[in-house]
Image 1 (cartoon, rainbow, N blue to C red):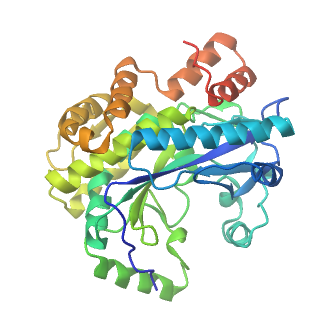
Image 2: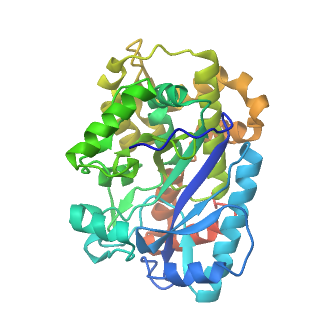
Length: 375
């Protein structure tokens, strides 16, 4: 049975970042999560630093944030705390959606009961799930509104993927994707988009049917791109790679937040199950080409580049920025999109210059610490 949908302040946000723990020799993932978690207990900070899937990963989570400035500030403190602990243990930390060098078959569970269960259930698919994403929770006024928001935001999934794309390299090779991380999510049988339901009563009946089959035990067993989180009173957008900088992660969260307010208050979209007819193609184009990909408007059938669609959306949502304190974050989005300085593009430019993925990884660790990205 589903938890009741909790009360939350509409349009507040929470940001989660899954980050890489690497050794400082060849920048492969290293087993240091438990030691890092013990070390960060010495410090006070808002939010949390938690284990995630394997010993080469850690999750940073903000508390409930009103907007961009608070999210950025909390993420910066979480980052600095983790970096301080990593320096003490002589390991590195970085963002990015994939580790350049890790071999999936070397990955092991972190020993937690759920991780052991998933490893046994999914086998090699779960081992390949050592990937790193940004999740953004957005507060909803009530359960039905949460589902309306979930399906409305699905049209913007290509935007979110392209903005955060930072996973072009897998196992030492250029995949030709801007976001290769989501290729590791697709094989899960309960991945993709949520079923088209716009009332919580419908969703509760669906969940009861699914738990009755034994296929799922909780909402966490659905690897949907966007899913409801009734315990928090939010919907959770899950398609983004972890950005290389926490400041960029906060800007993306501000964009998600402002689009959400625009969708629920202005109600510019007429929802239809047919929206999902172009969903997989739009999602693929964002993963493959990033901002240069094309996406099809499900309602009009018109195509545009994802870059142009984001810029047009920034104009449409401008009136919602001030109530959320999101303007600085949206300005960062506009500048970055206009200049084509996505994380995936930066990683490839750096590799072209140095001809070494190890150097790219080294500089990614430096950028994560808050240093300016070299041009």
